Length: 209
Image (tube, rainbow, N blue to C red; front, side, top):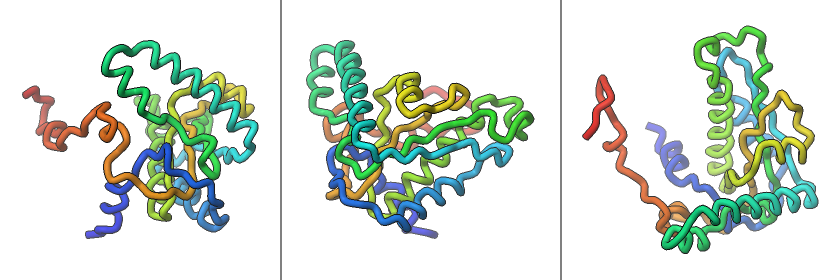
C-alpha cells in the first residue's frame, strides 16, 4: 500500500490565507503541470490547457471581480449564515505566487471523441481529473492550491482572451504556503461538516436511510 499517496490526499487543502508569495522553481512547476497533463481523458482527447497568470494587473482585475461576486452571494444570506460567511476568505489571488487557469476545449480530439457520444460532459470530467492531478502533485511538492469559484465565465473569458469555443473551468491559486490547515476552512468556520463515508455508499441500488 502506498501510504504516501493516501497521506497526500488527506493533507490536501483548498488554500486561501496561507500563501507566502515565494517563487516556485521552474522544475517544480514543470513537474506539477506534467502530472496534470498525465491525467486520463475521454478518447485520449486531452481537452485541457493551462494559462499561467503572473501579471499583477490581470490578477488585481480578477480579484476585484471576485469580490463583487462575493458581495452578490453575501446579499443572499442572512442571520447566522451571513455572519459565518463574513469570516471566510474566498481567494488568494493576490497573495499566491501565480494563478493557473485550466480550460476545456470540447473540440479537442474531435469530431468523434471515443467514449463521449453518450455522455456529453465526459470531456469536462477529464479536465477535472487533470485539476485533481495538479492539486495532489502540488501538495506532494509542499505547495498550496486554492480553487476560486466566485466568478462569471464570460468575464474570465474576456479577461484572458479565451476563445469562445473554450470553457474556463478553474482559476487555481498556486504557491508556497506557511502551512496547510489540519481542518478544512469551511469546517473550521462552521459552514459545513464532512459526512462519514458510510453515509454515501450504496450497494447494488440507490437506497434511502
